[in-house]
Image (cartoon, rainbow, N blue to C red; front, side):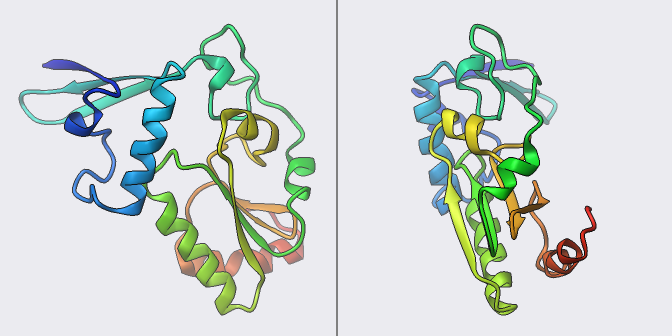
Length: 179
């Protein structure tokens, strides 16, 4: 068993767990750039590499720069979440909106899929990038913070959806059902 401290100086060698076989992809490169900026803010990653096979990791960051909609200055990141989700979602207005940050390497593909599905249905689609922890804390329309799909100011999902699943969601939102 080996515990590895991942930091700006070794992240290219150790990787960061996601998309290790696609290091040239847009998502991997976005996540790598995101990590480098976060290491300067105090992000820490501990990776467990088991000799018998298998890996695991934990990452943590000072609360005042957490990339979730929490306000936790002088604390470790704790789930003290705001309650104004409907108001936050409503700020994004009409059409289909993907709100995201570059924290996950799968986000570029997920965003493209959402916008293509919207276009196929004749729905206006757009993407909004949150570029700082402050923007996430103040503007994210869900507790997840780094990926949301909204339709006409209502949260459809805070995780990636397959195209077939996404194509049903705007109809459900129009009918007022939450899922």
